[in-house]
View 1 (cartoon, helix red, strand yellow):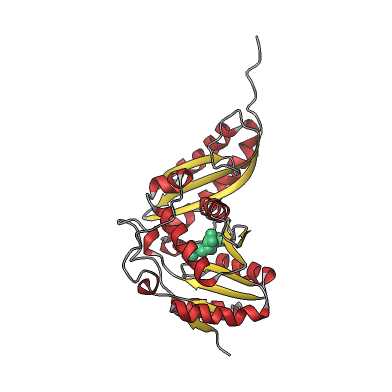
View 2: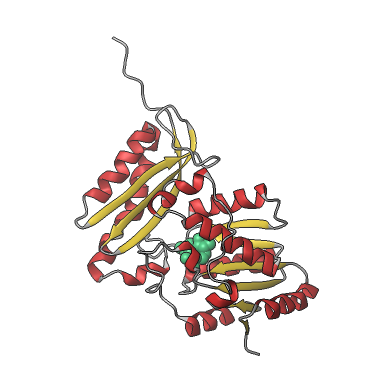
Length: 290
Ligand code: AMP
């Protein structure tokens, strides 16, 4: 039997209602152009629930006017086949008119202060767009569990915040970052990279490894180490190297000890890549007293 694909919201609600007879329902939201990172979310969804729904929707609300919405890869036939092979029960693949029949919605979820940092500073309004579409998807599918990748750490943080702050009745499960053989985080945007840029992109996981190694010397040393690796590669434009407290997303300084997240964003040619890693920071060694 081939996988069921639905496009319209009422048909989706009806199809999910039928799936609910089996037990728990999981939702895996995606923008398509699927790779093994997405499929790891599907595998975790199967572990967490009895029926798995995947959504494929390139959400215009989360793209800025000069971003790659038009150019974003759309590979629906391949995505459908990959989701079928991964035994997804239902694919929700709405058009923009299904999700936003009256044009861009005017009522949106406000991501708040953390939504304005880092990715949100480079991409104003991005997280309001993300949270609005995630809230809509949760409202349409009403899953028991929704799955997100740690690859987009700030997104995960904000989705968890939204679910808590708005008391949305859903569990959020986070899946570790899936990587290529050389450590580059899998991303739908990797396909934009030229051969040379792809080779340079290895600097992203290398920078995280350098930060982890320097972490015992404190936050500044870890950030400097990551930045040094990225700066050594020709043609890389660093958007940010940030070290934050995972519980708050506040930037930390050398006084901070404990678990932290190192977050990177850099451009390789026209392609923006993100990556992050958990590290443990210790206080920077104090200068010896005379
Ligand atoms: P996207 O299609 O880029 O919106 O991604 C859909 C979901 O897949 C998001 O929750 C992402 O964080 C997750 N994802 C994308 N790439 C990876 C990866 N390399 N490892 C784990 N999760 C990922």
